[in-house]
Length: 168
Image 1 (cartoon, rainbow, N blue to C red):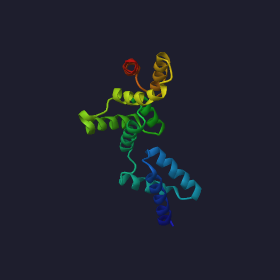
Image 2: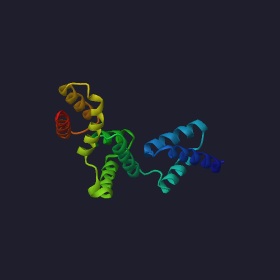
Image 3: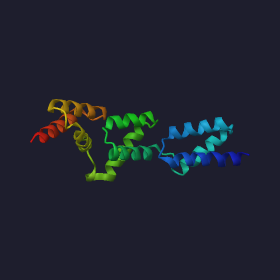
Image 4: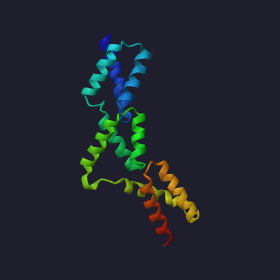
């Protein structure tokens, strides 16, 4: 019976992971719910999580790296808010730091800086703010970038540069 439980639980775990990368906490919570729902033995949980770890499906550093890259590409956000989001997903500070270090090593000189990410986000957002006065545009852009988690100094530089450039 345990072999059957193992097969079902590993199948559910792999299906869950196939949708998108997951943190260890997310996988553990999902498998725990499945064990409770189907009445599987707790020992099978340990076996399945270890197997998923052996297959590198449970790896918070790789998850954090993929998450950071995804955020940078599709919805540029500041390092602070991305880190906070990863912590909510159960990723440790150490794993986040290692992921940022690995990203820096992989991308090297081609790495997109936080200032460039803020500029990308602000440029895109600025198009929808054309109808506002310069002061309102500046304030709305500043607030937008703050909500995205960028640093005050970076925001000030980007907003001043974009808004003054638009006036010329």
